[in-house]
Image (cartoon, rainbow, N blue to C red; front, side, top):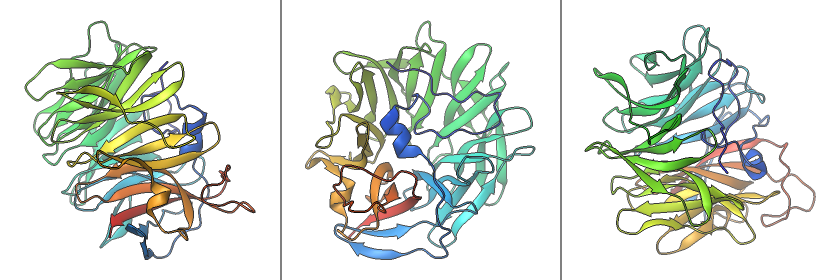
Length: 378
């Protein structure tokens, strides 16, 4: 059953999270725990099986998780200290490397979640009173996107190439999904009937928006089409709740459906409805986090101990990201967070520093550094 993973909008400390909709299960917590990492003074590139890879540098504090990837190869995420205090949103580009976006006025913590082809970055930051959604550009800096009327906090989760931003706004009326546009400001997206908890988590370049809507306990993946209205995408068989995390320009939607036996990654299409993407061998839970125009999907798959990033395609099915890089790759890849139309993937990894551990070992040392990588097909 899905339960609230929404950070309190009155709490100025930004908490570690994988996706905003779920209270993380044990395997998700393993995947997203930040740990102190060595400060990288230079990126490293290596031919690695099917991919060459670049390791992204971090901001002072040494920890980081990359969350957004654009078609131009820009990356956005959060980086800083282990426990989140003083963690800042960052943007990385091949020509400028890692840049600190900092926080909104009065705040000290921020995180970036999405970046578009033009380098516009969105996320959320604390202020003197609460969390606020922001948009950042190199020319204009960080800008507060505000709130829906009567609310006290907001978060931005995705941006498309037209500059349309989606997210959620919180207040006495509950959690409400919004879309923001330059010149048009922020407006509420219609929830499912009776819903008190609605979040917009993804948007494509046609203006179609996906997310989740329902109550604090039971929510369904939803689609707001650019032509108007909201559509309930349902759940996988025998599940109770679901959330849609991303949508491509072909209208294909990915996310996770949750029930008695945990979380299952899905893909939804207009013609075929919702289908389970399966899990990696030996793993029991999955979540799909991103999809590109070709229908390639990335996410996480794990159990109570181990977590692995995955890549799914219609031709090859679900594959462990670790099987797609060279055997001497320096970490175990624990999550794929973004995939662009060129097939590049952003992923996080954990250093293999336990005696006797190998890439298919049963355990991972989760107190060692979490490192960020951009994988590019050869």
